[in-house]
Image 1 (cartoon, rainbow, N blue to C red):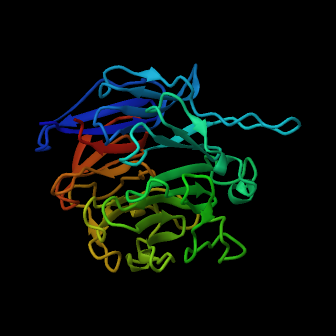
Image 2: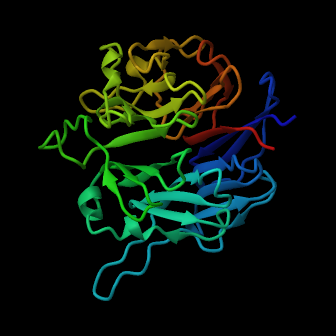
Length: 375
């Protein structure tokens, strides 16, 4: 019976942690892409074998690698994501890095999506071998208004992230733009609509602006229709599409902790259960665990209440944080939770956050963590 694989993308390579489904003993493979930046790595849930990794290699630049044998051998994409050439007389764009990878719908084997910095959306229909721009977004006349001019946005650059395919409709896509907001398409990316009603935007002149927001991580529930969560620059939100307006469920977090952070993780079966990792977002935004005391917070009632889950985590003087892609869940029962820190630790809970265990120390700065069950 296949076990668990935890893909840890870091500043200096991709590390793979392995265990059986009992999750009792863990081992770690030698790093892939050693010394290279790996922004994200994902196992295709449709075949349990194909791996796709977003790599910024020193000699190749931003690209995508793929493996069809669960990571034993890797090959660079024949056509990596790249913006279409600009019309004559206009300045073109270059992909700075491939940031987010998402497999397509279960009914579309071979399809993948990639989000980049500067904000661009790309797709592949051959398992990540060749990529093409999604013209409906990349060439949209309002794209610059949504994302801002080059050089504007977050400290590490504006990014398209959180690519989500509606599990009940392969034509329905959700994306997050930092900065820009949440957008959706119901025609596979041909047209796009802002989806930000109800979100606070304390940094905008118009707090009710339809775009210009800063979602940090967006998750669509994989088993229950029309339930969406996001961790935003301005709080934690849930969206039930019947109401079509985001509700700030983070207001129920303890005031001494707040509801600012980057990752958002959903229970794979229960739409009312979710987890976040708060950070210090006050004053100068130090982006560290609040008070140097890291903790995951979980809700079992769709955000009406939150519980601190820190048993086994450092009690003091732990000044790291967890990035937007660096926290995930496995599909087992009880659900396993995993997060990687900016100080190179990987932590896991095999009882949905009740108790935490350190799986490894001293890795490079962790960018992304994905848990999966290979075939």
